[in-house]
Image: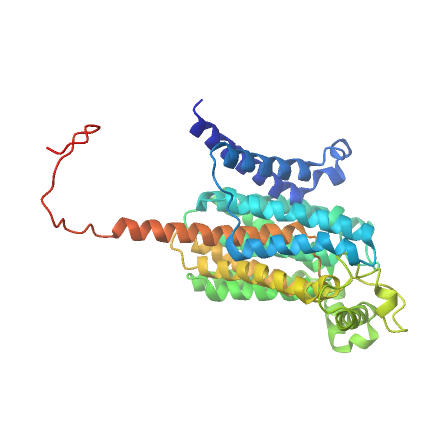
Length: 429
């Protein structure tokens, strides 16, 4: 096998491993299949994808694509998190958080280096949509059987989906993708049926989570997708169907919990967010530049919380969490990264070949970030995968635009008589 073919094969296997990671991220088989618990499939698949990608670059002496200012900002963000061990209120937790952020940075860089075609982008997004069915069914089954419900009525599942808000946020991002596949002209009917099922099950699971942030994020995401989709009538019809389904099938407890937004002073969960935002503000005033250290928000809670806030909460807002833990320096890094990825998805939406999928990705990103205004999870693999897919979409669209401009560029007329050269002779005839 020649070196070029070996490099291409490694690149292909890296793509396969990355697709497997995207599916494992939702199906989490190690959490509910005892025989796979020790396999650590997420780590294995992501590590394999990153390793093969690096081997290919080294084998062909190719520089790794770091995704410009956006990628450098993420590298700076994770490096700052690791360095914050030296000033953290809990160095052990900060060390763990920093290492996890480095892993997530590696996943992001692997995505932007491996997903280089519109087809690959669609395959990974499709794998996420299909695998989300497993998560949705798990949530719905736990709700129907009354297993481990939060507050006695909020559904959840295993692993990273044990938090109803986190679960709703992660499932919400696949709904615009599923609906985009469903509305895509020329898709096989079997695939459309699978996407319809995935979207319906995900919306059902979000409703059963009773997550107010998840509901708001999903509503904004679907509204944005319907407005920006070029086949607008079909998009509006699909959106209307999902809204009607929500109105008909949502349990009464879902609407009762959403009504507490207007009376948040009487709601313990809502007041927990208010207290958390106060704590983040006081952290920023005390340590504005570098914060209390990555992962240290809950551990610094007793120092900054008001007397009536006896229970320590997470920040419930990803931007305030970053400000509290890594200060304004960390927030600057994160804003460049997140804003650049979101802008990339919107820019790629104009691409003729894959604009339909980029529009769905941009809607998912907006919905996800809105959810993060109420939740806040720095260590969410779904976040970095979603942002990586958006960045990859922009890179693919840019490459397509460059190729098109080169293809239609006119060859200038020669100013001198044409001459023929014997190959290898060095002489003109």
